Length: 217
Ligand code: DX5
Ligand code: ZN
Image (cartoon, helix red, strand yellow):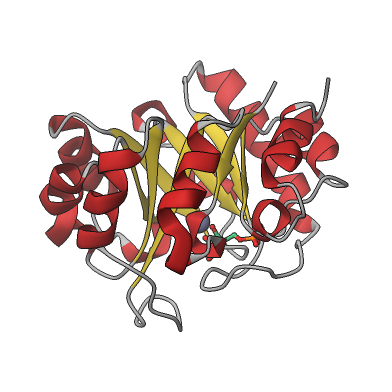
């Protein structure tokens, strides 16, 4: 069964406590938390203070996705805010190897995210050092966008690379994940599915999470 990570970007921020409780009580595994700086992506979301507040109530893994330039400046701050997994973008990291070591030295799992145009083979020489690869299946910056089909091919290629290398890296997919495409994503090799709009726009979010969890079964 895939790991399900509801994206809190689509939560109702006037009722954030209620939505966190819903995730706590659901079959979801992680909280997916999107940090945007208006520079790496054309949108600004939330940062450490909100994550620190959420952490007080959240009972599940805090999966933090940094869509920011110079992410390395803030690793310690996100650790303090409560991040368990910290993912940086390949495209925002000049010294990716150093960044991954720094994240792990702080006691977090280290993730790398790839934009839709970035080929998976660029991770070939660093895959052994990665705990999680986040494949973007939309252009990062906004929730509720349409799934880019090529992501499916990228998942298969990445899965083959991970298997061949003996790496333990998990594959997470982010953007446009629905109940319809989830089974194909799991079949291609995805270990974790992020879902924002699909969960929070549904009439029964907890039931939608339950259904996503069944994908590929
Ligand atoms: C987009 C974010 C996603 C987003 C996914 O930049 O990284 O996590 O919240 O939202 P949906 O599932 O609605 O595409
Ligand atoms: Zn994300």
